[in-house]
Amino acid sequence: MFEEQGYVYGYSYSNFIAQVYSWMCVALAVTAATAWYVAAMPTFVNRIVEQPWLLVLIFIGQLGLVIALSSFLERMSFIWAIVLFLVYAVSLGITMSLILRMYTLASIGSTFLVTSGMFGGMALYGYFTRADLTKVQNISIMILWGMILSMLVNLFLKSIWFDYMISMVGVVIFALLTAADTQKLKTFAQRFGQHEEQKDKVAIIGALMLYLDFINLFLFLLRFTGNRREQ
Image 1: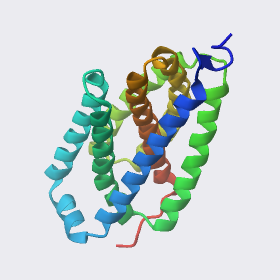
Image 2: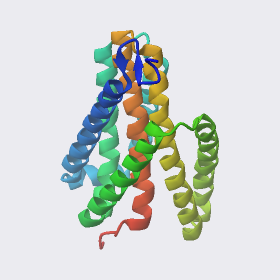
Image 3: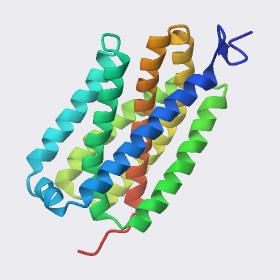
């Protein structure tokens, strides 16, 4: 009965999900502030653009942070989980500063609003639906890997239409993953609801999942709605 009402031994799903979304919003704020600050330093941004190996190092570091959070969460303290999560948000803000220099602020703002609406709608669906979205998540991840390979191929083809097709698939995939990941949070709450420290650390992982869904949904939508600055 308690699980049907949204509780696991007195612990509410909604409390856990509120904690997850709070950390996600903190990370988005950190990323936005970092991107804005870095974009205001044209010398630093130009150095990143002129020396692609810096971006490669940043991407490798970001991948390492995600692996560390996902693989070693049980061994690290809650404080270290927060630190790594926020460091990741800062690093992504550095790369997102290039977006601020590439697109107009008006188009970035409007795309952010559209992304928020889509993300919120899919998150609500994932939270309230009784359908099992596990298969949707598995299929979406497989398609995502195919999409990544397609993006690598298009680096050589340089096809605008192929790029638009990939972006369209990306929007659909991350919208579906938003719903599936939100539903997955209920499983997390059931499994870790009784363990305070584990629950708090798992909330960081949940926030990381949704944070990545939001960021990628925003970036793929920006390919359609973004207006580039005049050079």
